Image (cartoon, rainbow, N blue to C red; front, side):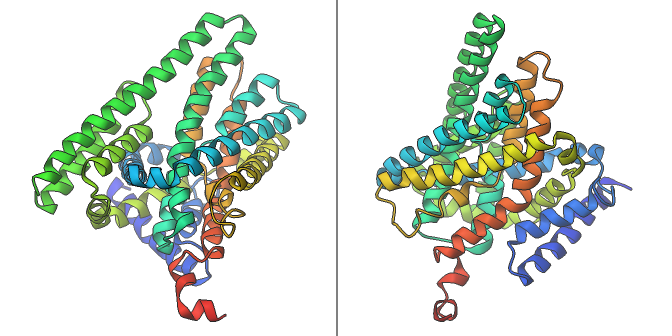
Length: 396
């Protein structure tokens, strides 16, 4: 078959899955992923790994759109209002997640070096899983804003912690200078990603201030997203972080978050249906049997760390009591960023033999399928979804 036919199948099957999911009360995101799972190697094997990587352009565009949307949430006024909360909750769940994940994966038999790396990888959150559930459920409110901010903040913390942890682990093997060099490289990469994102955001802001027509502005915005992604990939930076910084620059220079959302809404539906259905097709359930207990320990530990860490440290913030038990649940989705960092770790640490990537992939199977469902439940429980805000729901 041609790639055009594969894309058509992904769009139609994904849409059907999303519709069925909404009928039974699940997020449409889960429907896309589950239908993709049916098309992938675990069931029909219609979408093979070769097809998945050949359609990688869609993944890059979708992740860039998601990242720039997350970035636009970090306006300085929002950070002024929720900044203390974001720092406290993010750092709190980071400490507990790293500690619990490292401990549990070590206790089930993984070497301490691998366990420590897995602890930092557990910090990452999938922008796709969170943002799409929020859009799908049309959620708005205090928890929605905090969770969107935490997605950006947690990933930034995760990438910095990852660099430091790999540096520390490398020192176990008398690779101290290499570890220090890696740490410096990670910090430089974050700085360069922020610089490129800020400059590209400034570029978009210039055209927004000139009141460029929305059609032309959409072309410019998409070009900037792809530019950020391409430059970041070329020089080994994080495309997600680069586009997040671009979104931060745009929203703070123009205060036009709604305009950016409106522009992306024009094309996001077909892009995200393909992207999420394709993500489901990339899930291979056989990986769970391969990593066994270590994979289950990673899933349990990350869940405990995210939930309990957010719950405990939210007590030291002015976040409403109503949403404190649910913030951690909003951070469950995990996928691409963790997998990407896992491959970097295995290149940096000798004799890993795929153990770290295998465990993270097993976690991604769980968190990519069930994470959006858990996030959707949390948003509904605090009454921030459109359905929960309706008078009919409140009477029940």
